[in-house]
Amino acid sequence: MKRWILPLALSMIGATAVAQNAPRSNLPGADVESLLSLARANNPDLAGMRFDALAAQERIAQADALPDPRFKLELQDVTKMGAQNPTLWPGDVGSTRYTFSQELPWFGTRALKREQAEAAAQGADAATQTVWADVESRIKQGFAQLYFLQRSAQLSQEVLGLMQRLEQIARSRYAGGLAPQQDVIRAQTEQTAMQGELISLQTDLRSNQSRMNALLARPFAAPLAEPQSLRALPTADKLDFAALEQRAREHSPQLASDDAKFRAADKGQELTFKGRYPTITLGLAPTQTQNDFKTWDLMLEMNIPLWQGTRRAQEREALAMRDAAEARRNATANQVAADLSDNLLALQGAQQTEALVSNSLLPQAELSLQSALAAYEAGKVDFATVLDAQRQIRQAKQSRIKALAEGQARLAQIERLLGEDL
Image (cartoon, rainbow, N blue to C red):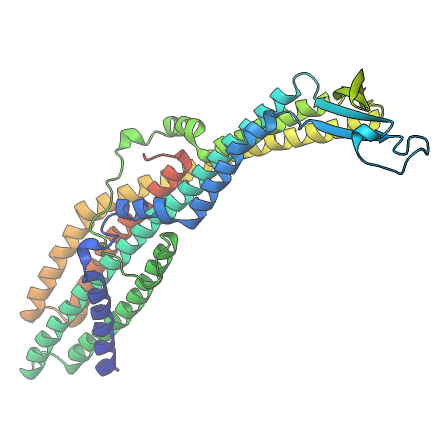
């Protein structure tokens, strides 16, 4: 099995390296900002929401406009009491009446419609920001995952190199009769396991790169630069829950969107109450007799809001919609606070874990491995002791990489809730 797994793993690693190294300087992905700048310009979800927001902005002027005036033409007595054949020429009929009318909504109705449209436009802007915050968070988390997979692959390569070295030591000791053949076999088994893990890591890496390219509107197989470094995590003084919760209430796009929907529903309720009053139509109607205009009429028309049962039902409906919008706004505020607390605790835990591993566990594991290697070469410990030391340092390094990636993912979630970088 070893004969074909090692070439396969190395070929996959080599193919990925070639794709990512040519030309590396022009590839996005070395840092998260290069990915975010591409997403701002190309992400299709964000583009769609921007157009929706633009459309909502254009509805403001429409809401404030008067209805179009109406024109009506009436030809009366087109046969002049049977004295002529029917005609449609205004000067040849008995009389022609021209009616110009304009509908006028009740006082305050247009202002309410404009305020409702403005609230809807603000909601569309906030929805756009919500989509961007989500895309931005996914890119930041995806970048952290790519960093984790890249560093995990490098770690597996290091372990593979170490196991190859151990195999040589075991072979030498076996040739000299100082170690059993089982030591050589175990070293080979560990290498096979590392080769299989490298294949799995490279598969996950390409899958994550495809998802990242989808967010950037790039071809799925387009190469990305290898992540070079992660963003610095915030210091403890910036992780106060009360301060972050206040920032979220002020800047969260989710809360802003729900608040705009509530204000639009509130204006909609006020508009419904305007239905109790009539809509007035004013008209001017000159009448032409042959070529002269001898009479001018003025017209006042209005609807009669008679069926109050229907209007009361509409008012109750509008009130229920307003209350529903308020309830959703409160639910979103509670959820944002809960998610903020959860991610904040997880971020602090990841920071503490990374500090513990870096400052304590990793140095201890490195000393243990060095000691075990020296002792095994001297014949003072068995091969199992060396493997245990190798696994400890590998686990420590893996824990550190995982804690770094977890911290970045939690930071991305917090910034999504805040609607801004922390």
